[in-house]
Length: 267
Image (tube, rainbow, N blue to C red):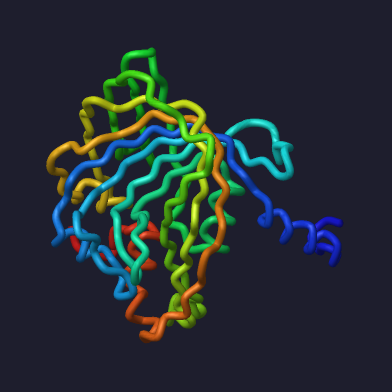
């Protein structure tokens, strides 16, 4: 039914997320960053990890439900995140996520609070080097060239890692934020191919709408990987945050929305 779903359609869509698994290729690099920067971008519910690290990754993926792809074609994404802690759990907190598929952007933002925006993402490897490019509104935000090392052993058994999303409910005209929540995801990944990144050259740029990317301080290159495999995304916890919702407004709006220039300002 167009425009108004039946109860059966709603139930089927909700069950879609009970058994979803992505088949993907993923290339990432990790650089040391500063504790001061990490602390400045983390909301009050998260703490910096012992070693501050910035991760930049490129991904191509298809979503599968009970062994069948949910649609033809792939989505491509570029992610920028820092590591953080919530209690005893250490995971990734994403600052920027660019994607090419509209549906995944909308659901990621509305259901979980992921900072997804529509952008241009492209990448390839020639067997020796990986090249990745991400841009938005004709501004280059990320350019990555990375050297590929030898093949590494795979991990057919699922390995777990975590990431955090921040969400809240905006009042009309963004007047306030209520019910802030921290969503904790547990990713279970089976790696079917893997190569080490031995060297990486990374260029971060900014734009009037996404100025934050160019402000990330990058130190020493740590490591990286060029992987292929499958991942299941499981909601481990949804934490109702005790602070006033307005304490989280800067962190929500700063990641989810464009930093519009004020056209009323004198030139």
